[in-house]
Amino acid sequence: MDKGTLAGLAKYQEANGIVHQLYKEGLLTGQKTNRPAPPAPEKEGYAYFAQLFWSKGNSPAAIELKVLEMHENDLAKMHVGLAHVNPGGWTYTEGWGPINRAYVEIQDENTRIREMVALQERVKNLESKKTSLLDLDGTAEKISLGGLGGGMLLAGTLALAGWRKRKQSEA
Image (tube, rainbow, N blue to C red; front, top):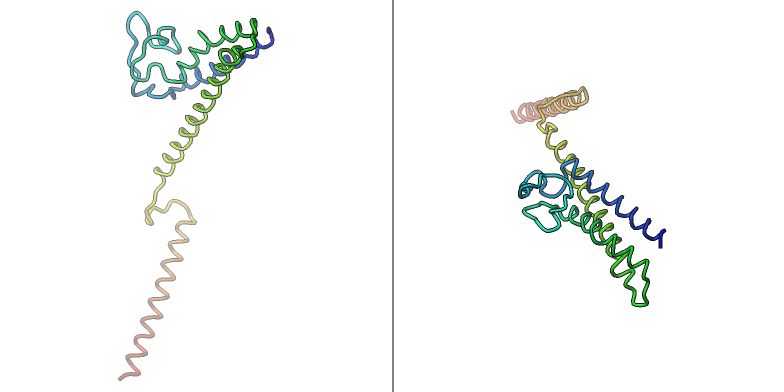
């Protein structure tokens, strides 16, 4: 029982650490755009108790609420379930199951958020790159354009010479 309780507590602590880090980085859903201040006397913060019964906009974020529920409800149910194992499986359906499900959902959301941040950074980098043929930053671009220009000049000269030769042979 003690090892099971400690294992559940470790799952909660890891999940809480992940969500708290997302909060500190300002990455929770709507945190920068749709997170109204809580009613007085509460102050904006991470996973405060009032979020269990008050919500507005994205306060709390879905995974923030999951962590609160893990802490306030699921850990106690898991401990009681381990202490009073019954043949109906209550230990897993009302104990370990919700802890594990919340943990998995938090891990999934963390992965989605981190992948989206990486994608946004890549898009930002691509958008900041110059795309005009006339934006020549490095030697390679200048050489490429010079080679292209030289090739076009050569092709034009050959075409003009061919045209003149044909005109002279017709006359």
